[in-house]
Image (cartoon, rainbow over all chains, first blue to last red; front, side, top):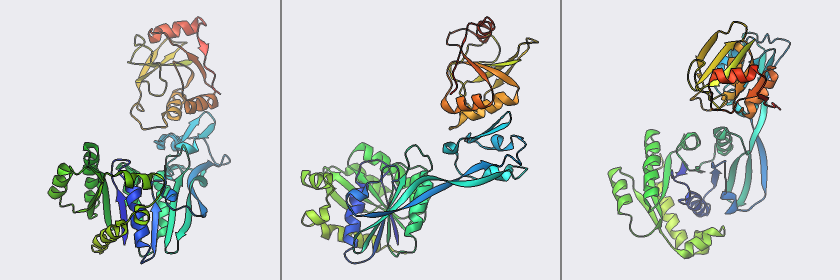
Length: 280
Length: 113
């Protein structure tokens, strides 16, 4: 089973919920936790452990000047400006390239071949006997987040229970993360901002045909609007975590409430039971 | 020689646009015949990488000199590779004013590297 954790809004507690859920599940079964927030991955802060890195590359064009006649077809084709044919030079801007391969296809002289360029890495560790953490890391200044997410997910492939921690937002990186998931856990908070973005994220899950449930985090006890929204959209509320200084203190130093505060392991075990119950 | 001036509208009376690759129009002036042609910039709403593509557009139309306000890093690299001479016009005048200032030798070159 593949469980994605998303939210739309940043800072609602996706990683907190993912880390506590993974820790709980890893008591009874093998779990792979994939940090798909590749621009700012931080699950490793909950699970410090020695890691092994695998590079992630993207193909970029290389020009064979023995064949090129500067016809300009590649530059006209590239909508990202990664190639420009000016006078008798083909300029390449690898960091603008989206690795679609189109330039090599349209070149009438077979003068373009693709060469790998490092854009990030995937870091693997085993912080608990039954927990593997796979972290996607996009190099600074790079744009191809989905490629690194895909690589991180591929490394987890084949395991019976995989969790994907998504980035905030609802654009390409989140869609790449959610794709292929069997369940989507949406983490929100009791603010108008949390609800606004929950609406967007729930829409994405619905569009992708992924069943979803909601965790309300930092609840101030006044969640009527969120509850109403969830009822209207048939989204079960699986857990409500109160706004509490004690929880904030544990989490802010990289601790896990399931390990450091009494009663939470049981509650996360119940949550995992609800989610695994919808297993296809 | 063909000079390209970035502009906010078509024609030589249009005000000069300070941005290079995001300029709404490129006005090409043939300094030998005095004829001008205005091209609507197809890249104005493109997501990114517009600098090199704008330079390619200028290159395809035979321009060798560009007059604009500022150029970005990618555009500068492409302009340098294309052997362009690029001049800064930071006044609020028209394309014709910028061309006159260039012809009089009153414009500073923009360094491309």
